Image 1 (tube, rainbow, N blue to C red):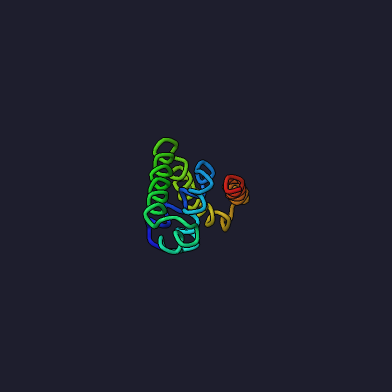
Image 2 (image 1 turned 90 degrees about the vertical axis):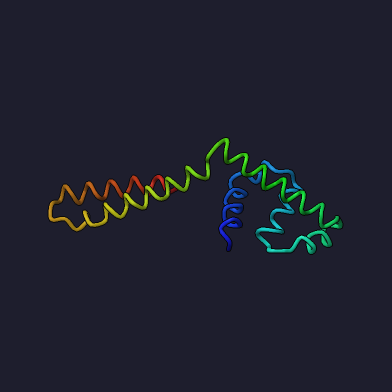
Length: 116
């Protein structure tokens, strides 16, 4: 999947409910079902340009929501930080000191609770 398509899918997963039902449908058909503009237009009974315009508006809205809230960027930053914390805590589970092992277990349990 192209990076732009992946990014749009992430934005849609987060903010898609804020789009109109038609925008959601066209967006899903285009990005998630991988239909062409022509296929969507034929299926929905509208012009190819109409589908293109609706998807373009949806992309702009989703990008705008992200600029304002930053939810997707924050989520990605959190995932990277949790992965780094996990990577640093894992070797501590093998430590000879029981207190160090218990501390590592508490750290990993806290990371797991944030992933839920």
